[in-house]
Length: 113
Length: 118
Image (cartoon, rainbow over all chains, first blue to last red; front, side, top):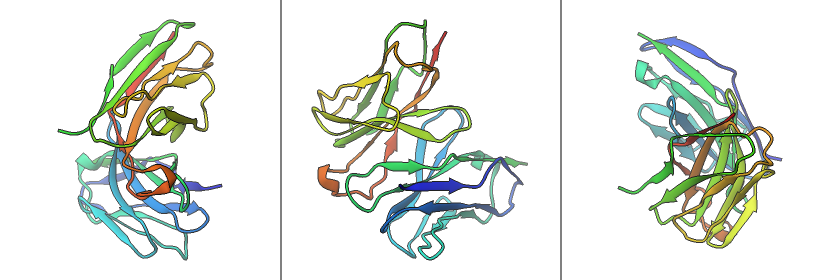
């Protein structure tokens, strides 16, 4: 079945550092890929998405590129801020049938001033 | 503004009682979902509904029930049969249609309800 694997957290960075959160997936066909962000005590917000190979999703300075050859969708940001501290979830939806999202376990990001 | 509302934000119940969590959306989305989140874990799908008057079990449906009588509403009942009900519950919706059309849209989440059962 489909699955998503994320790097273990927490990821601890200083403000303005470069961020990478790794995400790899297992799926048949061509799934759609998503990054969601969850701030403390809140629901999830869609951060960015990519629906086909080599697509780059971007939003609020975050980027991720759909790499079919490495089955990866790593999240990056060039300069993190304290306000980026949150839990980040990678997810996929299958390429056939009704969309059911499969989530990774989440990666907590802590950014210090 | 369009969005998804869940109420209440915090809910406390005694063991053995059923409890119903509310989820309402005004996004005109066909599909709705319920997830459970436990500390340090990802989201697990409880139930989902592609269209009014239809719903399917997700990965952890035991001890839960749902209804979908209106497009806007998808309440979740946590029954006394659920062995470990204390968790953070998230409702979501998406504009996806039955038969997999518009399947790449992503899901939109409510703010969640934290249920504590003692």
